[in-house]
Structures are given as C-alpha cells and as structure tokens.
Length: 382
Image 1 (cartoon, rainbow, N blue to C red):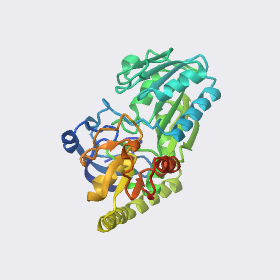
Image 2: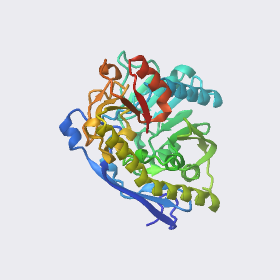
Image 3: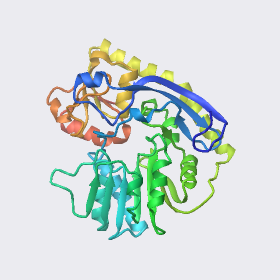
Image 4: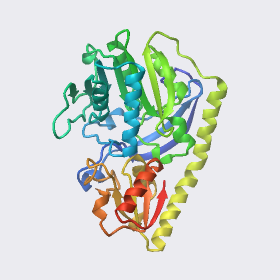
C-alpha cells in the first residue's frame, strides 16, 4: 500500500473499527430504516511522508448526500463564526459585487451570507440544496447537483468548499475542478476538520466512516499545491477544530513537512490508539452507574459524536431523550440505535437527572437554553 496523496510507502496502519454507521449527516425517517441503515469498516492509515491520514477501506458508494442534513447554523455561536468568516473573505479579497461559487453549499446558509454582506452574485452546488421557505434571495442560484466538469465554464472571483473534500473518495477531485474554473484573479477557501485536533483530543467519537480523509496542516497544503494552488493563508479556526486554507491558482511544487513534524503527528496518533479502550470503558462505566442508581439522561446534540458514542457504548434504559435544536433532524431516528431526535422544548417538565452535551464547544449556549427551559440537573460533556 502507498499513500494516495503523495505516493509514499512509509505508512502505518494504526486503527480499525468495524460495523459502524456510514453516515452521521443522514438520519432516518422510520425506526426500521434506521435499524437497517448501512454500516462499514474503518481502517486508518498514516503517511509518514506527507502526514495524510485516510480510511483505506472507505467506499464512496456508501455515502449519500441526498437528504443530507447537518447544518450547524441553528447555533448562535456557529452563526457568529460563519458571519465573521464571510466578512474576512469579502474584505480580505475585495469580494464585493462579484461572483461567488460555493461547492458543497448544503442548504446555502453560508453562501447567502457571502451574497448579502458583499452584494455579490452567488452560485451553489449541493444535492441537498434547498431554498429557504420564503424562496431564494435575489442574486443566488442553487443547483441541486454535484459540482462536476460540466460546470467548470462558470467562473467566479471566490470559490468556497467547506467540509466536503474530506468526505469524498478522492479529495483532489473538487480542488482540481475548481482550479479549471478559476480566472487569474480567483481565490478559494477550503475548510476541513483538523486531524491533529481530533486525534490529539482523543475524540474517538469524531472518527466516523463518512470521513475518507483526515488532514493535518502539512497534508492539506500538500494536496492544494499538488492541485495547482499557492497557499495564501492556512490556520486553525472554530475552536481549533477546523483548518481553513486560502489559496490562489499557481503552479508550485508540493512541499513535505520536516521529519520532526511528521514524528510529532505519529506520536499524537499513538497516544490516541492507547487511549481508545480506556475512553470507551470509562463511558460504559458512567452509563452503568446511572442505571444502577435509577437515574436517566438526555444527550444534547444528535451529530457524529452522539452517533458514535451510542454505537460503542449502550446506555440502555438510562437514555430517555436525544435532543437537537436543528428542526431538520427532529422527528428522525439515529442510525442503528434508532433513538428519536426531539426538540428541547418537547421535554416540558420531564427533564432527566443528566444532560450529556455531545460537543463541549456548544456547552455555554446549551447550558443556558436548558436552564431556561427548566432543567435543574447535572451537565456532562463528551
């Protein structure tokens, strides 16, 4: 086996997990569909040359973006983050009264901000794209389709691609297509989860089948340079959980990280592997103590972390509710474990003793909302 990004042969197969749900962005309308939803295996491999991490048994056919619903815009904190990002891109690259293309735009929320803040024309591509209930805003056109070669005749001043290339079977596909569509003054912004953050924080709950790729800073830069870009800016964002990279078209030779940097990433991965069993045992023990004391729990946040937790650690009868503020996920069922997702308001006066916050990044706003709704118990964070 060689690295699919750089072709290097110095690799390390460091982690595997079998029979996991293949998607966390797609949840199910019935219990039966959720129970029989597809599963796949994860076998993670690390390249010591470019620091790219990938699932070597990932099957893109098991990841379906039709009906995908994973918007985080229902969080006030996340909305503030995306608004600041939109302003930075508009002001930093003078994207006003120009054209913006968002590849993998989801429902189009971020693209609307780019259009409205900069008085721009927006074009979005995503098989799950949907206009807002009152109709699409002026100067924005959404295509309910994958971005592909036939669309590269549409050029833009700014291209955006957030949290897509890490899911695709070939992470170079969209950067290469965007590169062909660019004019000499175009810039692009690409955003992905930061692999070092995930594995360094020992977040087994974020290791999901849906992600074919995990990028470090050097690996992300290498990919974009290989696809014909010059790196303008590369930094952490969103509580250091993501990597954001600004690039411009240019022919540059990809650069490898120094051996010391690759060794540091490898050490991080080793510590992650050593911690997995202990982490799972710890949460199994917490759930057992809840059951033994006849206490109950709700999980707040029905995303990847909750889905992985519930597939690795069975809380049994102690789990009474799974909460999410995203209306697009409410009333649907989690894959394989089939818990129904409900709105926080639906609990009324029937709150459990514990609320487990699946992503601590959102803890302050979740805690405030839960207290406002009458929760008087204890908060846990995953």
